[in-house]
Image (cartoon, rainbow, N blue to C red):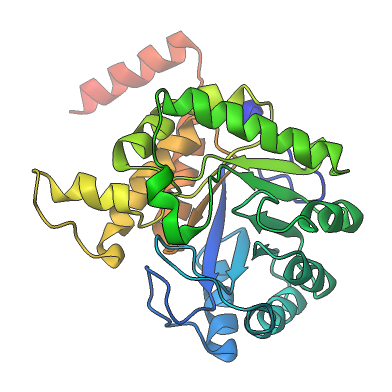
Amino acid sequence: MSTLRGRVAGLPDWDRCAVMGVVNVTPDSFSDGGEWFDTELAVKHGLDLVAQGADLVDVGGESTRPGAARVDEAEELRRVVPVVRELSAAGAVVSVDTMRASVAEQAVAAGARLVNDVSAGGADPAMIPVVAASRVPFVVMHWRGQSIDMNNRAVYGDVVREVVDELGQSMERAVSGGIDPERIVIDPGLGFAKQAGHDLALVAQLARLRALGRPLLVAASRKRFLGRVLAGGAGAAPPPARERDAATAAVSAIVAREGAWAVRVHEVRASADAVRVARAVEAATAPADDVSGTTANATGAV
């Protein structure tokens, strides 16, 4: 499975699914409600995530939860750039989560090594040229429009086929705009213009996304579809976002085993453990006679 993950030029080559920890420098995140809005607290949180096993830290200053309004450019810069600078100076591999070319450009200058744009360059026509000039990796996520009305766009015939087709078109725009294809990561955009059934279908059929030929980032952490799964019966209330971390880790294990390049999560430790277990299972490829011998010994011991 490890060969399916692929490599991203400009980033370390991890021997397993990587873990991207989330630092929301926002007052209105669906998952943590502004807990890391202060610069100093955000930096400390990012370093804590690294200590817990995060391979990358994704810093964002604008909420993309369903219904969220956009923050202005000056405020996003104020929130993001100092956190990126301090985390990078401390040795963290930092990603910047932004739809604005100006924020991406200044974050890269401050040390960010990856641009994670949920709009894949669709929100700001200057984004692709800026990333191409910066020569950093770029996450191309499946996106159909801004958060304020994206739920109205969650209409599909075959969600996996349509997401693959639309991601392919976004990749072509990025490459034709000058971004090195070896620096592109794709993201199915779980929760963005999608209902719970759409998200589950995408997780179940990651192999169809791998046909695009680029490493996959899967961002399931604490999202609504997990709340729907955990709620059980129709009409039951889903648990709050913070009570979905075990379910998030379960998805991390599943997609790591299916060849995902990285998972993006809020609570790092459980997913860091999950991807390492997935890698250990993947590596357990002993010859059949060794396996049978192990089974016999285990049976005898019992």
